[in-house]
Image 1 (cartoon, helix red, strand yellow):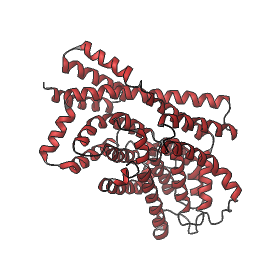
Image 2: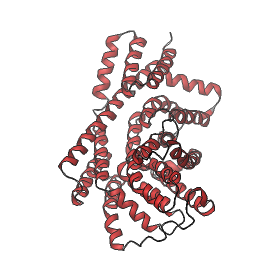
Image 3: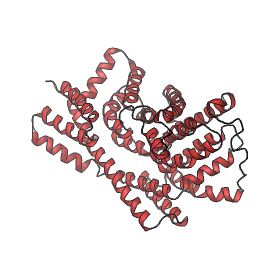
Image 4: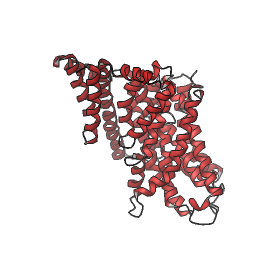
Length: 438
């Protein structure tokens, strides 16, 4: 069997093993090692490759970014910063049509600039925003769908764990990825807000169960209270992003500074005791170890693909079919969207980026621009059935048997459509992703 054919066969075997329930990390490292063994007909070489991937795959100083940003996100979550951010946004938008929906989007956007994890945003705002929206006359479908839809901003507005994973896999600057995500993240957030306003102004029956203006009777929040609730998260955002984009410190140092800042906030707000701190440290270790193991496995997997010549073969096939760069991009994004129905975000990146990034670069794509498009497509997968992990997070956090999973999926559908429109616009106008990087 030719090496390329063997490489494609191993990709098929890997997808099949994932579908039957084998963990993604075990699958990647297993198919990678077996592939090297079969391609070189040398089991010793396969074991050496696996050892090399384990040692060199995460030895770089850059990988300290992962546990630091995870720690920061967990500390922010336990300090009730998300609740305060929503309450401020709610007070500012209380008399705007669809104001509570827009407040959820705005609060999620700010929260995303600190946590970088969509699932954390979905869990926090399900508890905070959904009860408020339902109390003020919004339908459960709209309320739950808004939280699920806007939670994806957690992986797009920097800092983002997905951007770190993509940067490592595609070997591009993580700091540049962070900067590139700003404009697309704002475009999508504004698109969400505009969509909510249009529905509230022209199709109120779609989102409201009551004819009255939502939140009209809410008290105006005093300026002092608003400042007190806003200052912690704004200081943290300014500290992380300001230092990072000014070049004062590296992404890894930004993670350390952000984690320290989040710890100070949690302590000052008296939200962190000994048992909670231990749980935060334990969860940080578990999440970080899982991500780093996946990156080790992906390193071996990508080396196997390169050894088999799979990226080159796909590139030649695309060129032979005459698809052109944007034809390849459309096909690649379509595959990512399909995988989003059955796999989580990190797994999709681990499988697809080693295949797609070399081809995209050979076809003239800027890998920063390509990465933003891939991350948007991957995030869209968080809203698609049957997997839709953001949707399932909202459903699980609600813990209400009267709310079916189909209700949350239906509520999230308009947000999926807005992301699709933003994806097309950013693909057609690359400076939307690269203008701040250059």
